[in-house]
Image (tube, rainbow, N blue to C red; front, side, top):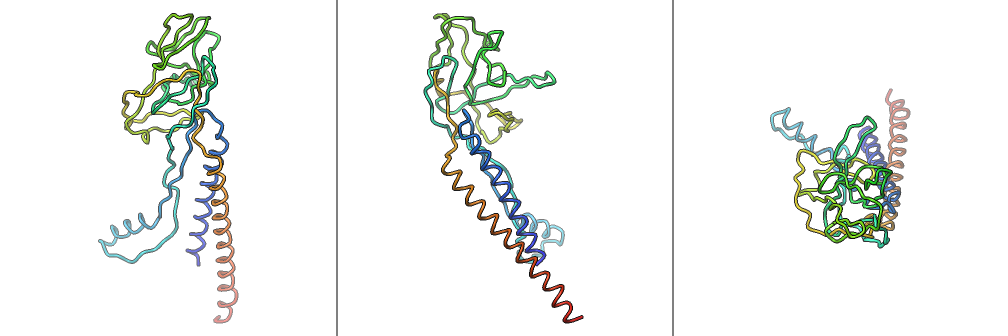
Length: 254
């Protein structure tokens, strides 16, 4: 009965985590370039049996199932649909890849980030920046745009009044699972990340929508809520059974 309480409580914790992830996906359904998160669960029994086997010299005691936990949160990097805006500073990537931006922390520390969000603008210095104010990188560093008519081509080359200014820097990675979310639809690379050439196109005047399917996420939210309620009912049942075992059965044989 005690084990049943723990299993049901763990089940409630897992469903709460899934609910938070699903709710965050829904909240970012209209966020440009956002990629949905997916929770992966794993059974505790797989690890526990291995640990017990090691401690007692390989003797098997039998299978137990103490519940599951959220093993990791994966990012679904599939591309979203492109939305035509006509904005000269709006860019989207057709194919896999990321824009490169130079992020500056509150402490003044600079670091390279990667994003699919191409909703850019010009700051007071004429730099092409993200919504957070981080400088978009080109082949020559920060992209700085003078006043004038801005146009671009599918290679990411930017022109002002017909004069070439710079090419937006875009890269891709061999395994995107090695990237870690930074926030605001940006990602950090890790020591396991390996860059590769960007093979797609840069679409000026377009923005990439999030890859969140609102209907699917709503269905998932309902499913998670029902699973949480089922575990909650099991906690109540186990608690009631335990109370009877202590107060009635214990009193009978005392």
